[in-house]
Structure formats: structure tokens, C-alpha cells
Figure 1 (tube, rainbow, N blue to C red):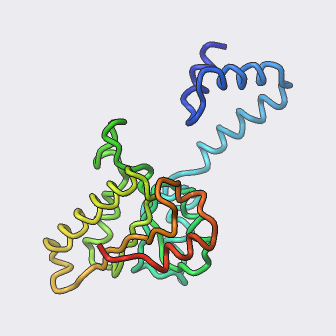
Figure 2: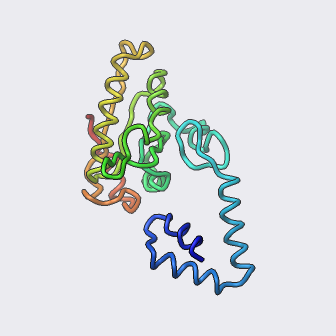
Figure 3: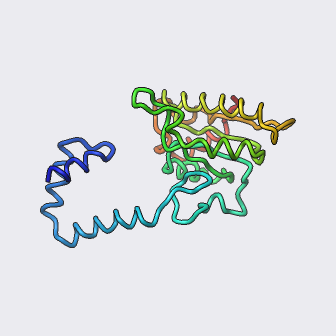
Length: 202
């Protein structure tokens, strides 16, 4: 029981009390229900992986967005988590591709640039096949810091890349249609549409 509680506490938003409730619920549940949960976790880990191009969660590599012939591969929207992609897709107006960082800069939690999945984004831009990078991190302190750091890294990269000599990569930030201090994952269609339409160059 202690081992299960310790493992459950590793889930985001789950403290000791919640972990204890989950553990006792599993103890009271049928063998079939417990086995179904265990099988679902095993299947998730066995079947899903990160896209080698954009880091989105996928069961095929490259993912459906990166391999789509109808999406603009020269337009990249950078988001914090895979769940943020659904918010952008609900606008039905964005037809570019994505890049998922899997987090934001957070010095207090030991998350620096090296912990973000940004290397393959910088490599994509350095190869010269990108016209615009939209920084769609959440308008939180961490999200703004991440966008600022990425904008600087991308500008520095374009200045020294041989493949980009004489070319410019537009770097934009989504507008404040998304309320400051909120998470982009919970933005509705109208708010997200305004944010995408009002993005600005950094």
C-alpha cells in the first residue's frame, strides 16, 4: 500500500491524501477493474511515443501533423504541452504545424533551457525551411520567460545560420486574447482565435 501511495503521489496535482484515497479505492475495486487500469497504463507506454520532429505524443512517427500534405510545414506554432494543440486546433483557422516543448522555464523548479525539448525546433529553423515561428506559450510568468528566451535563441540562430543568409524568419507571439495568468489549455475557441489573429512580432 505504501509503495502504491508513493507512486500515485508522483502524478501532477496528487498529494498524500488524494493518493491514499486512490489506493484504497483500487484495493476495494474488483480484480478485473484493477487489471484493466494496469493494462491501460502498459498499453499507453508501449503504443505511444514522441514525434521525432515536433515532440507531440503519437502512435506513428512522424505524427499526423508533421506528415500531413495539406498543412503548411513552413509555419510552426510552439506550445508548452501536447494538450495545448487541441486549443489551437479548435480555432479551425490554423493550418501550420507544431512544436511541443513539454514544459516552460522555471528556475524555482530546476527547469532550465536544457530541460526543454527545443533542440529539434532550433534544428528545423536552422535548416532554412521555416518562414514563421509562433510562440504560443501561456501568458504566465513562466510562459512569458520561455517565449522571451526562445525568441532570443531563434534570432541568434538566424543570424549565424549559413542556410538562412539573406532570409528572415518571422518570430511572433500570440496576442493577449488568452487572459494573463491562465493556462492556454483552457482557452475557448473565440479567445484562442483572437489570440492567434492578434499575434505580434518579437
